Amino acid sequence: MNTRVLVMLSLLVGMGAVLHAVLPPFFLGMRPDMMLAMMFLGIILFPKLPYVLILSAASGMISALTTTVPGGQLANLIDKPITALIFFALFLSLRNVLKHSAAPVLTAIGTLISGTIFLSCVLFVIGMMEASFGAMFLTIVLPTAVINTAAIVVIYPVAQTILKRTTPAQLMSV
Image 1 (cartoon, helix red, strand yellow):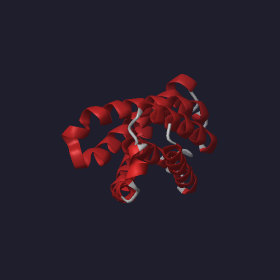
Image 2 (cartoon, helix red, strand yellow; image 1 turned 135 degrees about the horizontal axis):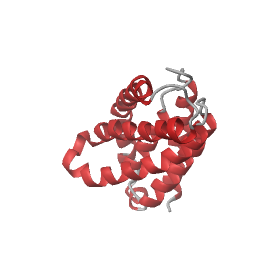
Image 3 (cartoon, helix red, strand yellow; image 1 turned 90 degrees about the vertical axis):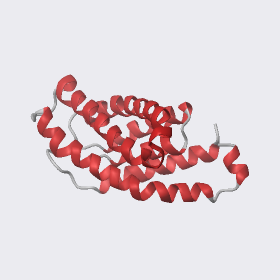
């Protein structure tokens, strides 16, 4: 594994943690998960399975530490690795078809998948929330998908520009 890539991925996790902590809650203490956008960006920029596994584990742990949802700790530890692997598979299979729109489209889809897994864990497996799945999906997951997609539309071109400016020797080792 490349140390530079691991440092970049850790910076994305750190930025996701800060964004996750500063955004206000929407509904029943739940806030949009900006960690997802940073995790998806890391997967898009460095699409290799070992990086995806490390990134998803780190994202799950940091999200579990910063969540305000009752039962969200376990749900985040379950949700992030599953979502990352599904997102990774979708990215590898659709990146040539979607080309330039792959990042925003897959971010929206990935956020919906993550929200479904998270809510299923919290509502059905752990049984910690009083609200219904539909209400939580409409009030938390859909707005989060919009926010994450908008963030990727802004952040992804900047990240691509930064990666293009690195030296060829650095890129070859990625």
